[in-house]
Each structure stands twice: as structure tokens, then as C-alpha cells.
Image (cartoon, rainbow over the protein chains, first blue to last red):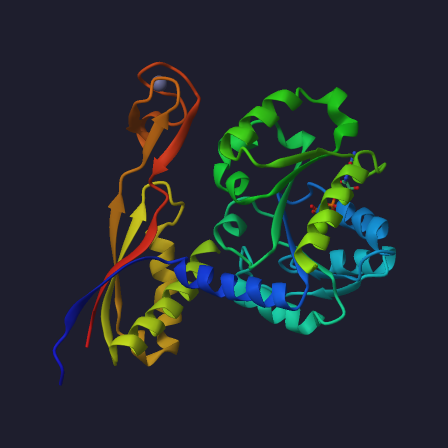
Length: 223
Length: 114
Ligand SMILES: Nc1nc2c(ncn2[C@@H]2O[C@H](COP(=O)(O)OP(=O)(O)O)[C@@H](O)[C@H]2O)c(=O)[nH]1
Ligand SMILES: [Mg+2]
Ligand SMILES: [Zn+2]
């Protein structure tokens, strides 16, 4: 019987996922498929924003959607009913986030050959998805006005891993003491390169700037 | 729920290390958890005890924890302070232009194995 020895590891438990994520990202780059990871609290408007985004871009891009709500397939049905994008439901088995390996399996099921833009609607949560790189080309977070402008102070990590921040539900600004300048300042402090798009997913206000940015990023990635 | 995901990732990492070092059995796994990592050792241990039974490599492995202190930095007075005690507001100058510089860790420090 061999004797036990101590092996020093000194590694973040997220290191293996980071490696999987980087592999997936370079594979997607080769295949010319852009993966967008959408994160937010539950109810911020991911599904509503996604429906509008798909309908604005579907004549220029072939789009596929992976829905990762914890235990329902309501969002997958909504996307399927309101858009022409190919949609699948991922099951996270009760987990609070998707990791790179689950994303890879989802993309396999979705099939990336015929897809220019794959969108992952991540599990509604501001903590766990931020810690697990999914292998996405770009990450976007949606913050809705009722959630308050201090979210970048409370959940700093997600603001540092995102490339874009959508501020949704600007139609209800008159009813909340949400300070648009402060949220910009707090968010930029966490991440100076962050692109910020105030929108109203309900009416479509502000969607054009967001969709233009996304389209440019997809074209750049897939060229 | 977050803890189960973490256990899955620890196991993956351990499998890799076992392969590299030709290990057959792991007796213990020492983790370093930051004070504000949000990981709860008791829940992690419960998830671990459930999950380890699926893999002979870690079936007998015990989880051990070490806590790393959380430290916040103040942008205004450029000092640091203990996060858990004072939170978001700098105790030196009262500013809330502060951010966490340590305490979010979730590391595998070392393992005991053969
Ligand atoms: N007032 C308002 N409501 C919105 C807006 N966008 C979404 N909602 C509503 O917010 C709720 C949650 O939206 P949903 O897209 O399902 O959020 P998800 O959980 O992040 O996917 C729904 O009732 C939407 O109709 C908006 O811009 N303004
Ligand atoms: Mg949704
Ligand atoms: Zn200070």
C-alpha cells in the first residue's frame, strides 16, 4: 500500500471551467458562431429583450436560442411563438448557473453549423453565472429600473465580466428613484469599457443602439 | 444550490490532478474559502458527502476548510479595512467608494493522496 502524501494544488475551483470555456470559445470562433450570454435577476426582461432583438436581426443573422431557466420551459415556448429562431430548453438539474461544459452540450443539441448568433438566456441570478465563464463571445447583463441603481455596488463581479449592460424598463423611470447617472458611474467604476444601453423592451425604445452594437460584434467575430 | 456546482467542479479538477500524478485514492481535500465567497462550508460538506460516493477516487476523501480574510480597499483614502466588520463604508474616512480586494477566493489548496 502506497503511503499518503500531500500534493499542493493552489488552484481556484473555477480553473477547470475557465479552461473548458476558452476551448469552447476558440471552437466557436473557428465555426463562425457568436455566443451571447445573457444574465440578469429573474424578471429583469431577458426574454422580452431577446424576442425584440431576434426580430430586429433575424433577416440579417441566423439565430439560435438556448433557454436555461431552472425548471420550466415557459421562456422557450415564448421565444418559439414570437420569433423564428430555433430554440431549445436546457436543463440545469437544479443548478444555479450554466458552466462551459453544459453550454457546450447545449450548443451541440442546438447545432451551430447553421447559426451565426447563438444566445444563451442564463439562469436568473446575479452571483453564480458571473463566476462561471460559459465560453461566450460576449456577456451582457440586464438591469431593470425597479431593481435600483445600487446593484453595481452590491454585485460588483457581474459588472466586471460583462461587455454590455442593458438598463431595461426605462418606461417606469418616473415611478422609481432610479438615478441613471449614478448607475453609469457605479458600473463604469467596476468596468470602464462597459457599453451601456438604456432600453424599454416593452415598447422597443432604445433597442436600435443595442441591436446595432450586437450586430457589429457578431460580424466582427464571424468574419 | 451553488454548492453543488462547486462540488462538481472540485471533482473535475481532482480527476485531472489524479491522472497527472497517477493517484488512486484521495484522503483529504483542503479548500481555502474567502470570508465573503458566499460558499457555506456546511452545505458544501453535505453536497460533497452525497457526491463523493459516485467516484472511487474521492469516496473516502474528507473536505477541510481554511478561511481567508476579506479585505476592502477605499479609493478615496487609499487604505484597506476588514470587510466583514465594516462592510461597504470605509471606517477611516466614511467614503463608500470602496471595493473588495480579497475574500472572494474559492481555492483547492492541497490534497492528501496516494
Ligand atoms: N414596464 C416594463 N415591463 C417590462 C419591460 N420589459 C419586460 N417587462 C416585463 O417584465 C416581466 C419579466 O420579463 P421577462 O422578459 O420574462 O424577464 P426574464 O425573467 O428576465 O426573462 C414581464 O412581465 C415583462 O412584460 C419593460 O421594458 N417595461
Ligand atoms: Mg426569461
Ligand atoms: Zn476611506
